[in-house]
Image (cartoon, rainbow, N blue to C red; front, side, top):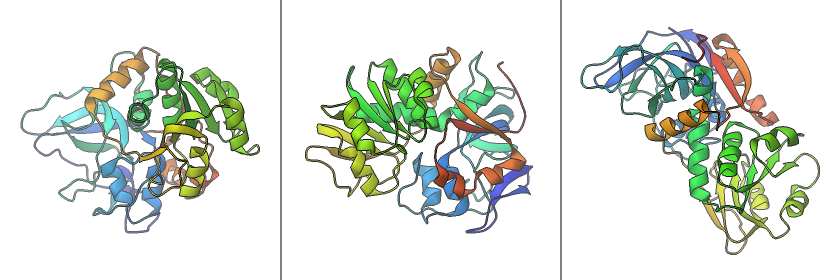
Length: 342
């Protein structure tokens, strides 16, 4: 099968041919139609830290915290996918051949098979993993963009626990997680202040943000104070890679507020008195996937797609310079086999 994989430690990702995997007992094999790109895919592919594989296992979504885990090479990149079940392993299984499914893989296969990622034509996954049926009316392309971004957004909202009419500052709001988080928060009558790169006022406003701040256009602190003169109730920082940058946004919080980081920089950051810092870790759940998919199928949750790529173009999309440039405006989807609503 074709796959985008890292062949050796610190090697660049490349399009390669790998054996088609066979499902172990309790697993199923999915013929992938779409995969979606997440920021930690780039970090994993470029070997940015020693704890990259841990990001797959622990679910650090917009970035990865410290940690070590064994890596299996060649290492197929990617975690999110949508496709059809084409083979079932032995034993009980809640799925059938032909089922249209989407989900998030948990990392490299424990037995050493190089099938842990989703930038490939086939992947084997446990039937009890973060995996769900695609509901009628939901495009498989959108379903592939939903697992990491949607689950992270839902669990971040639960972690910061803002009540109706309270304020939530979302840094990096224009990307996949931020776009979903803005919509979910707005559905709870939370006032979202979206911090983005560039003029995204119209788009973020359509997603439910009451104010949008361009962090490249002058001091963000002044704009945040103008939007929330009495301080912000909670912070979800999806972008800041340093404790200093995270602390600068957390300074806008009022006492009793919570500052959450998806980049693992909350611990040890200098925070205002009475503000608690939390480093986020995703806990993938098939039940949560069902809820998110239903919302997307009903049009309640919009999944913005920024770009579509072929598998051959995926290695270029993993260039770390794209991450440093910032300014993501939704999800990037890798098309292996085009398929619409079913």
